[in-house]
View 1: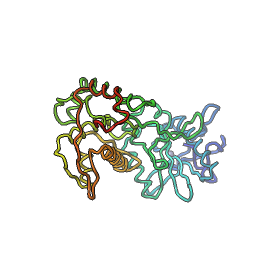
View 2: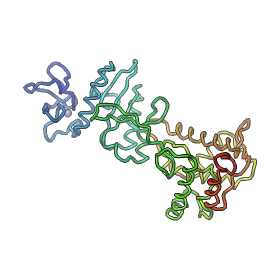
View 3: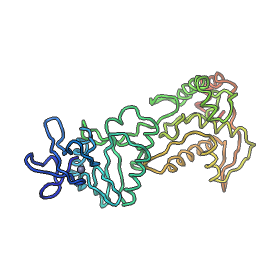
Amino acid sequence: MLVAQGQHGLILALNALVDQTYWCPSCHEPVILRHGAHRVAHFAHRRGSHCRLSEGETQEHLLGKMQLYQWAARRGYQPQLEVYLPTIAQRPDLLLRINGRLVALEFQCSPLSLKRLQERNAGYHQLGIQPWWLLGAPYQRHLQSTKIAQFTQLVAGRPALLFWDTKKGCLRIDRSFARRSLTTKKQLTKSTIIQIQTNHLMIFQIHHPALLMRIMGRQITYQLAACPFICHDLQPAWPLMREPVILWRIGIIWHLMQLPPFTFWPYLDWINWLYSKIPVKWLNYGCISSSLLHEHFLYQFTAELVSVRILIQCAHGYLLLQRPVWFNSPAQKLNSLKNNRFSNGFALKY
Ligand SMILES: [Zn+2]
């Protein structure tokens, strides 16, 4: 920890003196001042202490907290380190005041479950404190989609992960986790994306029959790769479900093909139908409302269906205007891409 009780109140380890005695603000046991050329000055409990605060903190965590403290102080955010909030029994790494609003900063370097994160956030919200989670180096390696969802926060209204880089001492807002199914992050033309996804779908169907069976709810007798163009997710999207989004889209389009034309859904029924028709594992978000991102995604997809006139929007809901048509084979589909029919008419064969 970076703060201890001194003779005259709380003191930062940075300003503490070797020959003085300091106490833990939580258990009131005397603590040891540790400092040196290669480590951040901090206080440590004596060996065998049972205090909650005696859990070992990594150097990165200590350094990040100290940097964040200095960073926030420079901006006039009146930072307080390791303040205990008795009503919720929580101790944020930093408590700031930004434009009159209390903000808790958590610099997360160790594993944390979604449930624990949600409990901590609920505690802060109960006190009207806005929590922000900044991730440390252990989170900069490959992140699973469940962890991305857990720490997703809205920055300027758009999803992002926040990182604190202790090497550079700076904040990084990372939006690079938005992705398309079965392709790389590179800038690609629409037609290239469809080619790559089509090729991957052929392989996917051979290697993942059990997953497809679960998502589609039955044995797949048709060729996934021959799906209509509308099934391809061409725009990168923030992670929403554990499975590739393209499988969800194929499932929805396939179900629409089975329905009689002019099927009608009131608005809410349509969104619920989209949300629940395909048994994918939707991700749970820990810092923002899950339904916010899910609904945004479902309305965007609906707009795509409207734009190619599969659906039309009427006074009280959506009407199935024409059923999408499958290609005869992946080869026929790729051929029609090659013949340039795609570029001038996306709606030619959805
Ligand atoms: Zn203690």
